[in-house]
Length: 131
Image (cartoon, rainbow, N blue to C red; front, top):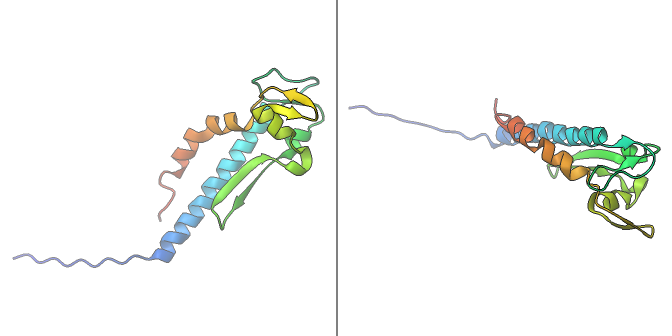
């Protein structure tokens, strides 16, 4: 007769620490990658960009406005134009609409950057939690 005895132990603290570490690394890298992609897509030029293409910047203000942050407690990352620098202009470009009495066509720059990078983010998460 064969007898088998198995004892398992779950160390939740270790699991939680691994998840926290992976989230910090992967979400932080994802946000930084999106920011970098957005900055590459914005061109310094006078005059507006064509509708459907990322906005132009004359003085680099929109480039300076693109920031990212990772909230370790909430485990989320946010990336986009800072309201304190460009106000509602970022939203007017991204989604189209009225800003300061003028109608803006959509010139998305954040969503296309996310879409260009999303497959890579999934691959980076693979195998990132563990010893």
